[in-house]
Length: 263
Image 1 (tube, rainbow, N blue to C red):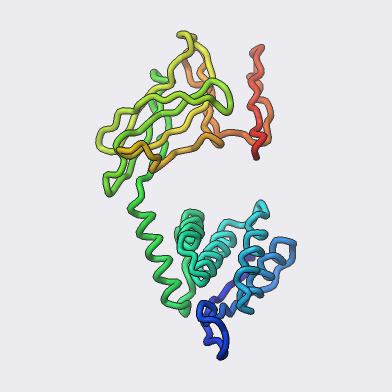
Image 2 (cartoon, rainbow, N blue to C red):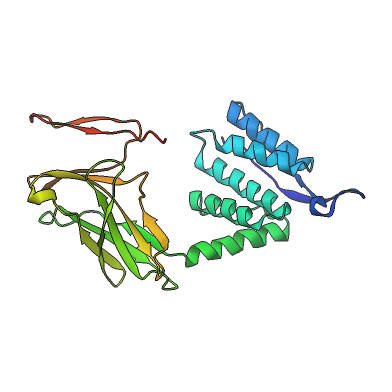
């Protein structure tokens, strides 16, 4: 059961520095575990106006793997507000953005300070206006190398969409432009030396007029993987960080997916 968190703003006693003129009052249901202890410590430090120390503890908690999505999103939202109190707008917006991307429904409690609500709504509007790429399921068996994606770009920031592809894990990645019509983009993974069977790693990104990346579907550290066997799509899967092997039953081939040493 997820812990319940209540954020409220209280007036500080005379003599407290202006940027810490408010305190975070947090109440939560107790829960065991090292990660929960780090989160409880972070909230306690924030309540005591020890914001810089609270930031460290929030980061320690967020470094714990396998925390529930809603819980992580709430912690990120709280950390974003602490950055706001520390006059760090860049990190305040970044943490709030991460919270909303994890859980689009996360929000401050009804009695949260207005400045916190304004931060969340401002970042929510920024995310809504940001270009977004999403890969589409494969639908044409006669075109096994085809890659399709949708582009949502309310402000028209993207000028081109590129299919980045490599024949080995980790690249180097080559680029092929995708053709886009009415928000749907299409491209094909090239066959090496016209071979009928090959494996490719790939991701898709949208670039603005200056060549800056404004949206991605997958990325160089977590690409998608496609194996084409005799011009037919055999499998398509995300990057497997733990490594391992996939065996084709009845065939004399074993395909290994290498782990990413940076993870």
